[in-house]
Length: 450
Image (cartoon, rainbow, N blue to C red):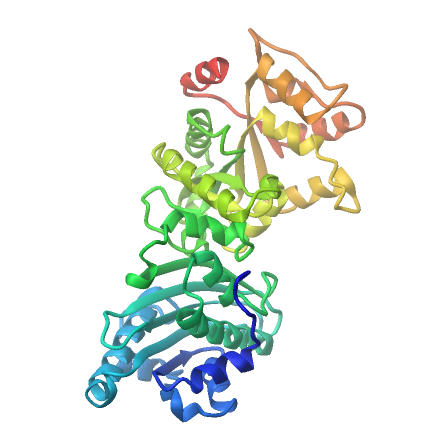
């Protein structure tokens, strides 16, 4: 929002109330009626609020919006938008349609329950007119609520809702400026926006994959997923109870060898793990952490360029803010209890053991402990001697040793320098680190020719 004057939530709600051309309805389920409450308490609400409703009871909600969907879901939110918009237009278009920019704001949220055992998330939607009588625009967000208490989560939903309505009418130029306005006075430790969907002329220049990559690069989400079938959805839906195989590396390094890593690992997942889960899912994993010096918009464009290339290899792409494997596993553990398998080449393993972890008090030991306490296994695939030498040199490591067979180094033949080797050998013996067994000969041929 570099070119826009910033206003607090009170000013935003009041400015909407005092605009005689903006008028609409509110329907909120879960997390109170915090968005409507802002407009009702700042003064002048009769200039904006046509109706506010909160259908907490499931039977009442079904009567209003139809049965057959989960109550905190995109289909339920879409049904709410359709019903509320239809009623608003049918009742008011004749009397004030020529001069009014109507809107319908809806949300359905699962805020923290009394026991603190639920997934705190929600769907937020806005259908609105930028000019009277035009075809409506629509934007839908999926959010994760990260505050520790129900009251704080309600407050965050209220801020986000006011920001969204204000941004739709005053800051809808670029996706970057719009998101900055929507997120104003919030922080990623409080709210994450990990899915965004839009329609209408107001968004005609937005590029879907770039915007979703920007959710991470711009600091609005810890992670987003680009599924192989190109049907975007929030991570909590795609990862739920899945046995995951994650292949992390840089965008430039990703390709057919990593697809082989995923395929080989999925084929070798223990049957008992698959029975306890909703099946296996393989994903390429990228991070924006190494591109911190670049402009967020440029990072998003670059990531978006790689996504369709990787999707063509048969697996989805997960984009993280963090680069550490323990941070990636901590995130996906929100949504699955199944074991997480990282399918990696020796180059990524070198990074894991070569990282100084200066940001952790316990350095390497703490980094390793954080990773493996989360029911994680590293499946490590071989590498050519030349590639390994280049990787070790690039990371600036000294004293590493390895054995090779016909120019190939495998995980069991690698020896980090000094005491780190004892830790590494322990992880091998206890099978936290497992040598990957290649079933597809193309992997090593491609790696050797790279």
